[in-house]
Amino acid sequence: MFWTRLDSLIQSARVVVDRPKGSSHPRYPTMVYPLDYGYLAGTSAGDGDGIDVWRGSLAESQLDAIVCTVDLVKRDVEIKLLLGCTAEEQSVICDFHNDSESMAAILVQRRD
Image (cartoon, rainbow, N blue to C red; front, top):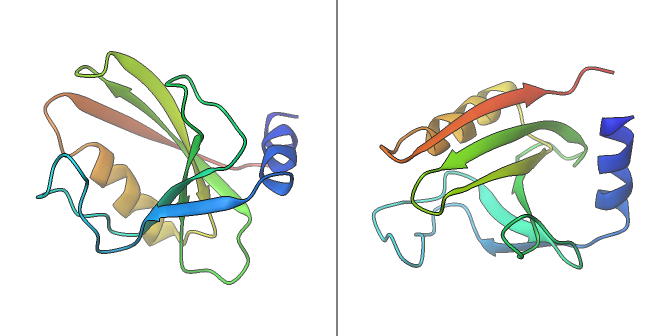
């Protein structure tokens, strides 16, 4: 049921990529996004912004996994949706979120 509810959110929203692959984080210029990163327009995450989305290279942009993060600087916990990501891309995304002293992440792959 969890995954189908997320599918409903994705189907009813537009994916906005505001940080394309290879771009730098606006506040941390040395942090470069390994894949397209953005959000679901018209949704709300715990930080008040849209639900975060990573978009991979697969033609079919189905929900493959989520990454759960904890950020000690922002003092928050979030989930990020992984759409159309290969297993290698999923690993790269998880590593990206674990490459910090103040942040940690776990990958939860879809099983249904």
